[in-house]
Amino acid sequence: MGDRLGTLKPQPLWDIFEEMSARPRPSKKEEAVVEYVLEFCETNALDYQRDEAGNIIIKVPATPGFEDKKNSCSSRTSRYGM
Image 1: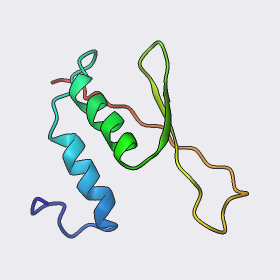
Image 2 (image 1 turned 90 degrees about the vertical axis):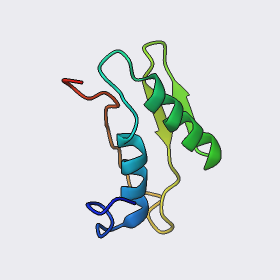
Image 3 (image 1 turned 135 degrees about the horizontal axis):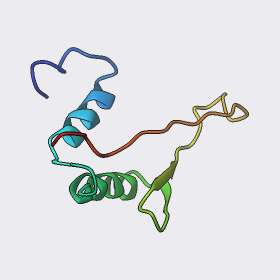
């Protein structure tokens, strides 16, 4: 991991962030980062769906003890101005 992110916690999250950030992803040209996300899902046996617009919905199992809690997160893969 790079010097800037090496001390941030939780480290696995920042490792993934750094991997994704290394891939070019201007708007409408996100193929490289989309492929990374799909490979991540396959490698980690995560259930995902991709719609006709290219959006990816990933279902992540709940942390034990939190199965009855509702939660969602949203993110985008493109970066502006690239």
